Length: 291
Image 1: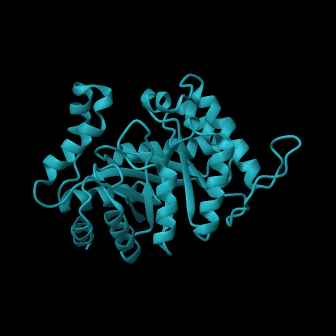
Image 2: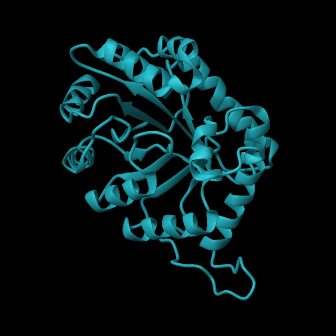
C-alpha cells in the first residue's frame, strides 16, 4: 500500500514558503502523492491553483485531488485546466471528484445544489470527451491541450452510498474515500461495496481503492487533532462536529501504525494522510512513526 500526503492548505495562514517546504519534503520522502482538498466557503487555498503549484514544485510524486466538488465548476474550463496540469506535470495527475457535503460551497459560487448527483455524471462524460479530442460544442474546434495520460487523468469517485457507487462505477477508475477514525473494518466494507458495484456495472478491471484520514503527532497531538476536526466540521453544527471529532484517533505513532496495517489488510492501494498542522517538522515525526 502506498502512503500519500495532503498539503496543509486547510490550515489557517499557510504561505508560499510553508507549502513549498511540504512539497519538497513529500517529494524527497517515502510518499507516493501530494493531495489537495476542495472547499470554497472556507479559508483554504484554491484547489486547481494549488495543484499547479505542486506540479511545479515536484518531479516524482503523483498529484491527487481529494476531491474536486465538480458540480461547483464549469466542466469545460475545468477539463482544460486539468489537461494543462497533466501536461505540465508530465502525466502525474489523478482527479478525484464528488458532490461535497456543504451547500455553502455551492452558494459561494452560485451553483445549483439540487440535481448535483446527476450533474456530476454528465460533467465527467463531457470532460472525458474533451480529453479524447472530441468536439463538444457544435461549430467550435476541439478543446486542448491533449493530456499526457491517454484519455485523460484517472478519475476517482468520492461516492459512498449504493446508488452513488452504482452511477460512479460506469465512469470512475476507483474510489477516493475519507474515514474519520479510521476503522479498518468499515474501510474494508466500503471497498467490498466498490468492488461489487464495479462487477454489477460489467467492469472487468479492478477499481483503485484509496481513502484519507486526519492525523496529528507530537506534543498536544490529541487536542490538536480533535480541535482541527471540530473546526473543519463546524458547518454541521456544534453537536455533530463534537461527535465526529471524537471519532478521530490517529494522534500517536502506535495508533497510526495500527491503522496503516489494518487499512493495508483491507486491500487499499493508497492511504492519504491529512495533516492538522502546517509545521513541516510534522513530516519528520511521521517518517519516524512509519519507521
